[in-house]
Image (tube, rainbow, N blue to C red):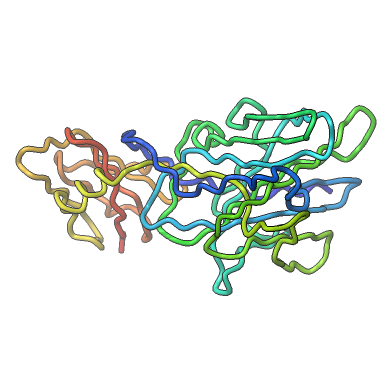
Length: 304
């Protein structure tokens, strides 16, 4: 029976583009694809769930929009024509391991089997060496909605879908290349087929690798964050009834929009240009998007 991981769409919020920053930059070893991990794949081969998942860690110091990730890897075949590719992001557990069970777990971000050229592209395929690099555009892969995560420690998990091998279907296996750059935590691998979940340090085919080879680019929103923290006041917060937004005299408020944590717009009554009535909302955490003449900022609010 086919098992599809639940999809938790990241916050679907508007964010002004202000550049990008590379927060993970692990180039491949000079030896190239002589040093690589076990294949990273997910499948329903022959009716069974069979995952070989490789994960590497990264850290966000503030709420951040993810732009693109590129994985440097190799394919074991001399041809590579997959129709899709998956990327999952999970929290870091208390023991510095990926906090997920691929059988029953729910990732924070699940971009499941992204179609080729719809957010997933093959940036390099060398038929002589089988070198295969893969890039994911988070916004495009997420239905043209930005993927935004709060500050925290995370694990990035890519997975090539391996079809069941029935007539007419090709089988592809893709593995991450190794890098000499260090990671916050040791890269991990899990192999499971209806077995207990155990993450273990990756054993590279080759030597000298201490991490996996990839890059991660994010929105450079420091100027927006500085503006929001120094210039915008949201009160009362928490609140039972109303949320007020106060801006400096030289900043014009253009629009207020409220979203829940699944990225869905929440209908609210605008009492005046700077005040929202949230009395009818269920208790919980929401994201208030404030569009101003200086740009777009985001604030977490709590409805009591």
